[in-house]
Length: 466
Ligand SMILES: CC(C)[C@H](C(=O)O)[C@@H](O)C(=O)O
Ligand code: SF4
Image (tube, rainbow, N blue to C red; front, side):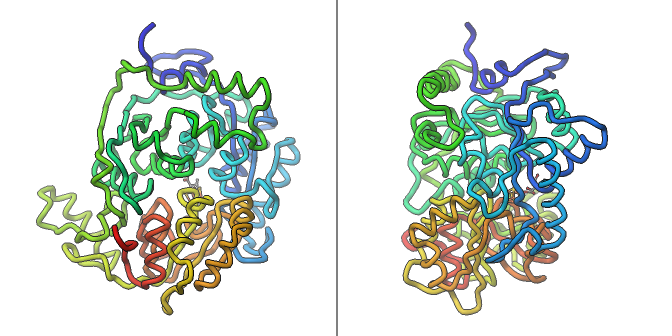
């Protein structure tokens, strides 16, 4: 039999009907709904008088528009309350499981779904959200879709898709101490650009990935879409099985053994051919931070912002100048030492337990700079409770951080939580677009460790020794 890539295996096992030009009708195993796109697709279905084909494969949680204020309820942010209400009512009507705020299982959809065992290796998982690619870390074919595609899948349990080309990014070498998956993927985006993945599904592989912890793998896959790829995944291994084992929806007993046997077949064959292969030496990666308005505007913290003279291409020159102007920075200058106003530790990129542990290790026993406002928004109710059981909430509070309730919060500011115009924020999120965290707000993407170090220093800095 011809050697196959992981993409081939994931894809082939879901094809119901092959169409022309690489298009196929796929079976969809799980649909995840959130308060923006989930509500929209259920509304679209009900307007067409259609029902949900298989409600037990659909799971909903309100994350984008809910307040993260301590003591919040669904109505703390009123616009979000209306979305919450609709999602609540429509899911009840359709017998879809709704993980409500304050309950175990609630959280940012890409945090709670793998946490609960709703995402398993080999499954097709869709959500009306581009960061659905996060779930590829478990070896699932997970991708974001539009609301009408989601509505189609809800009604039929199928979706017509075109098979992407395959790209493998191999990470060789060893990550330096203090350098995380966030730095690795930001470095990769910086080197390859935000369009390299367009039309591709990216498989991350190599010794660095083999050693990477599960939550770090999720951070890496989360930014596949910032690389331009709708799907990014990692072949499941013992690390994956260990993570899934015992979670609420994971298979048990004999089914577990059978599942592990099948999951072990989900890897690219040794001689499989990819449409594109890239190798990255992870030993070269330092602590990274973005300086501009695209994730590819990224540098190691100890290096200068690129100079205008360095680029020959006129479009790139203009883009860089526009970015520097928006960010209130000078091209060619040092970014380290620039004062920051706010720190946001949160999002489906970097608000899992291990992220909070890392940040807490940096700040332990110290206090944030006086002029800085700093928030921790845990990725899910479970993350919050586990972190509290470890006393992390106290570590953060004692350091001057606000310890808040789970949700997307300032990652996209769809819940009214925005920065002030001109504010400079170091954020553990994935997008630094113009206005992402509020009009005229300046966002610098970095890892939780770096964000924590910046909170203490009140200026852009890395952690010591790196
Ligand atoms: C609101 C939602 C559809 C959007 C996405 O698709 O990613 C959001 O989660 C984001 O991160 O920008
Ligand atoms: S945390 Fe941010 S990136 Fe993730 S789903 Fe929410 S808004 Fe999108």
